[in-house]
Image (cartoon, rainbow, N blue to C red):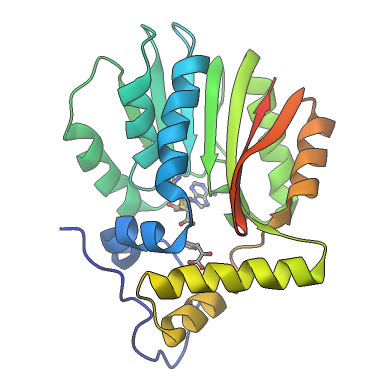
Amino acid sequence: MAGQDNIFAAPIEKLGDFTFDQKVAEVFPDMIQRSVPGYSNIISAIGMLAERFAKPHSKIYDLGCSLGAATLSMRRSIQQEGCEIIAVDNSAAMVERCRLHIDAYRSDTPVQVIEADIRNIDIADASVVVLNFTLQFLVPEDRQMLLEKIYAGLRPGGILILSEKYIFDDEQAHELLIDLHHDFKRANGYSELEISQKRSAIENVMRPDSIDTHKKRLTEIGFSSTEVWFQCFNFGSMFAIK
Ligand SMILES: Nc1ncnc2c1ncn2[C@@H]1O[C@H](C[S@+](CC[C@H]([NH3+])C(=O)[O-])CC(=O)[O-])[C@@H](O)[C@H]1O
Ligand SMILES: O=C(O)C(=O)Cc1ccccc1
């Protein structure tokens, strides 16, 4: 059963790097909902965008799918026939639970859940690609290459949906948006200790870019229309159309 996230509630003596292990997978819906401002809105809007952009007999990719929230939202919304959703995550615990979530509902759109590193999979004939809070976990050097592979695998007119935590060049703005995010977490029941231990645990594994860095990289790769369609504090989502 999915539970409440209290992973960082007690003091942890040797705080290691954050990983997507079984303990995290078990509480993930609660953790992401209470930690990422706008998460549910983004999940719904991914469904709306997929409904518009999914083309008949094309592939739809959900990269870093965790428990498949974006996949389920897209599968519910897609009207086109012959689409296939390919959901990929390299955490065995996430993939195992993702398959249970997907199998709990039936639909005409098939879903393949693959346990793999998104840097090693083929992407081809795609009309929609989703990176919902995943790119930020790749080492910065690998981000460009993954986005190039996505661009090459998209059909013309296809869409990439890229949600991320952001950093901001203006120091005052940056600090304020981080503080507001911490207020959001406090309002959702996280203690100061939970907030600070989680912050230390993700410090080395999650290195956000600025909105400007994202836009420049996407434009340089060749995407034509790149825009932020949602932002709440230091979290947001962009689309990039080929
Ligand atoms: N190289 C990689 N290859 C495959 N998977 C990876 C890799 N690196 C990280 N992951 C996976 O990316 C996911 C990131 S969570 C995505 C939420 C989801 N999209 C959602 O819409 O609920 C975001 C967060 O927790 O902030 C985890 O499941 C990792 O195992
Ligand atoms: O919790 C945080 O502070 C975050 O930045 C978001 C997050 C959510 C889930 C896993 C890792 C990071």
